[in-house]
Length: 194
Image (tube, rainbow, N blue to C red):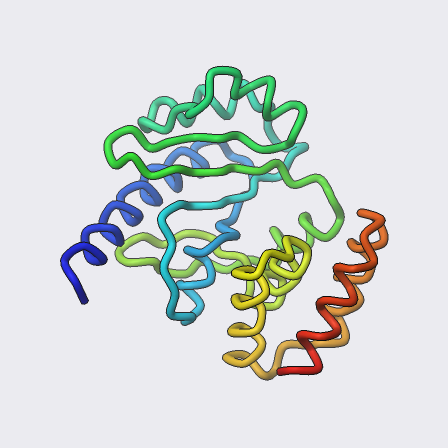
């Protein structure tokens, strides 16, 4: 492993440790949902930021910002609170490492189920609740960017026991809510390839 990559992983690990301490302290259910979760489940890929979800009905954004700030996790935009209330995501940065963190507020039944089904997994030296591979496939299918589809494909390949029918039903449900049938079409194309 190159020293640049090792340094990047060390920074991510430090930022994840701070985020985990803060979110645990908040008392709200939470989990890691982005590239760090994908890596923790065995997919080889690179990431430079951390994405997490916190149960939206368990904490107010202003209170969460207060808790995060005690762990050097601060807003990375001037109107972070207003942005979070409008877009359901806090755009943050861990000051000591410069690592960006996005903490989204989970409100849907799917997200609540995913929070209930997450497991403590290790990333480097940090144990944190990580979204399950099955639910990560759903998150990635809904996001729909090319990297997300690659991640979903990698997880489906690495975890052949994932209940594809259940995952497809969740993707169909969320695509319908988003009024975006192309999401399901893209996912069906992915299932046909894997």
